[in-house]
Length: 409
Image (cartoon, rainbow, N blue to C red; front, side, top):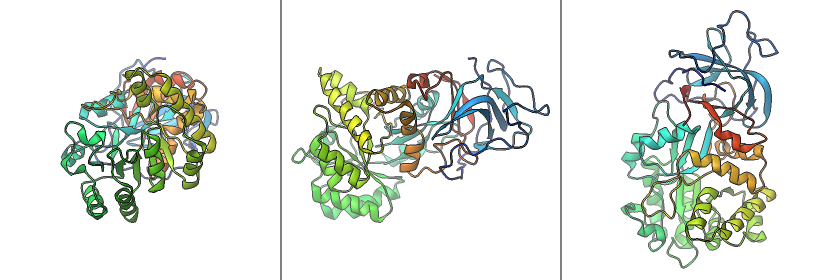
């Protein structure tokens, strides 16, 4: 499949309205025939190899659509500025050549470094990144709302304990240590004032140097009183249990070694906790320490969580941080994460939902995660059928991020 043309840039800082759900809600208007063919009034479709200038409206013709929920047969999707539109009149027409159009991918666990991070994510079709720790606030603010590049939400500075591994990482934030319950209110207020979209707490197994249960619980309760979601880092079984005990909304990572006990899985179901296993990170750590068999247990844990009905989101823990237990590449790794989720027992459709509609739903991103008029024009054109063969998400043809077209990596 050849490459597509360039589309227009979004207006800086524009936020797109619309609500999630309903799937691909009839993007065709009366200008299109029910067969999906263009009427004579439209410009001739251009091949992807042709060069073109910027345009405010693009009609992507002859594509199957995974709308975030289900697969629709060949049709046309309109990009109108930075949002998905319905009126194709005057649009520049792109021939999708029978490929599949999917919503822009969402990585539910990344770590920012610089503008290069955003560029790398975008080139791999990751149009939204959920950052789990970036400081100082000025760095985060500088990377937000970059027109045409991957859009960011962030936890800002996380809460960590005084003696755990994260407390010993080079360059940790001075104000990250949570020691007592009395700190919780001001801790949360400071994070919110600094722009955190949700809060993160790094838990360790009891006695391993993380925040103690009382302080962690007070932190979660303070965040919930202010309407903020709490993500808990939990890479060990004891930390995983603690995350459920304190009422964390999302648990990120999954322990290496023995699979999660059935009673822990049942507690996550009961508490309606969301899981972001970061299998790419866990696989890399297991390989780095020479214990690849430990990863098999993590994969079985994901299988058990999914079978029990725990929502699974695709997140990689992509980072370049010094002192990190493993370096995971931004962008490319999300495609591997989807493959690992399928190997763990998710269907290809479930894996796609884990990187589109589900993170949008659970992180309150109602303007993305689906292909529906009014939502952000975050779109990825793929050569192949990732709804049946997940590895074809790597066969990127073109990416639109907030309506801006990009060539793939």
